[in-house]
Image 1: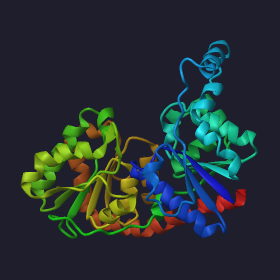
Image 2 (image 1 turned 180 degrees about the vertical axis):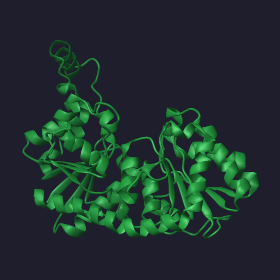
Image 3 (image 1 turned 30 degrees about the horizontal axis):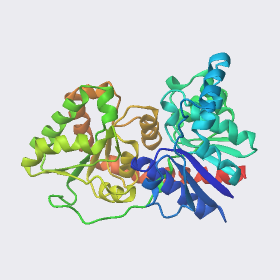
Image 4 (image 1 turned 90 degrees about the vertical axis):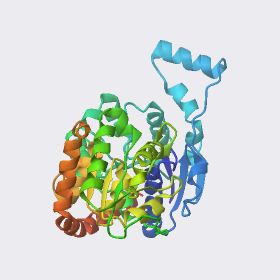
Amino acid sequence: MKIMMFAHGGSLNRGCEAIVRSSTQMIKENISGARVFLASEQPDTDRAIPSLDGIYDGSKSEIAKPSLNWIMSAVRFKLLKDESYATGIIEQNTISRIKDVDVCLSIGGDNYCYGEQPGWYEIDRRVKRQGKKLVLWGCSIGEEDMTDRKLEDLKLFDLILARESLTYNMLREQGLRNVELCADPAFTMEKEELPLPDGWQPGNTIGVNFSPLVSSRNKQAGSAVRELLSHILKTTDMTIALTPHVMVDGNNDYELLRLFHEEFKDTGRVILLPDHLTAVQYKGYIARMRFFIGARTHATIAAYSNFVPTMVLGYSVKSKGIAKDLFGEEKLVLGIKEISSGGNLIAKFSEMLVEEEEIKAALRQSVPRIQQMSYKAVDYLKELA
């Protein structure tokens, strides 16, 4: 079986890297002879992923202006409201590879949470037109994200694998019957433990991740996180390890966390992890933390999967659904509106502190089950072939 992963923006988002790494590993372990290729919008960022059989340039192409393609695109859109000619040209790097594979996995996880995606819709149509299998791999989609157009696209898939139960239930309620429940593949990803940095307290370091995406959606959130950091420094003896997980231009955790580091570094108890580590190396640090507070889903998955009590600064269905499947409730997940207040964050942190041992025990019980659910995705993929 030849498989092409697509809808991947590149591994500067370490969560995207984690999906590719863990998915490739699971597939190759469980499907004999499987070969896995990746179409990436930034292929140079994915070279550190060792298990791939090849990396394709999946970047978007420009339509030269003026040109025959530009004229045809404009005419078809103006007269017919048809953008497929244009999107077919824009996505030609990925589309040109469909003929070489058996199965196409759309791996973007939460790609369908961010409005309409005409480029991916066009790729999906081309996959089915060429008679290939089409799979949406480990997705999260909120009810508020659904549109008629998106639903029509989802009907094209031979298999949709929801990575948490909230998405699964919603898609079933929408009438889709090509949906199965699994878990995020990154729960199974290995870790690499690098030497601990100066100032790290073994067994007494708390990781904090914050993102420009959350900050832009709630302008008060940065002040609330600052208040929480001050509270941790005043009321505990823990070291704080500021932990970036996405280093994309315009959406760079490291740049935001560096501001917090400048503000608090003189305490001697706030350290900033570097911005060039791989997903497995960040997981190696997160695994050795006592607690974790994070806005990036795959940073929190790195914590959960190592039984680290975790508080989530959530902004979509994925955070809530993953927590619900782990704990039976949306435990220690704060919605985007809730993180306006430092008081809210401090109250949840205090809850996590008090329930530390109970949370660790619950994770030890649930994580192996969730990891088995991750592997179920490969079973469903194998059945499809």
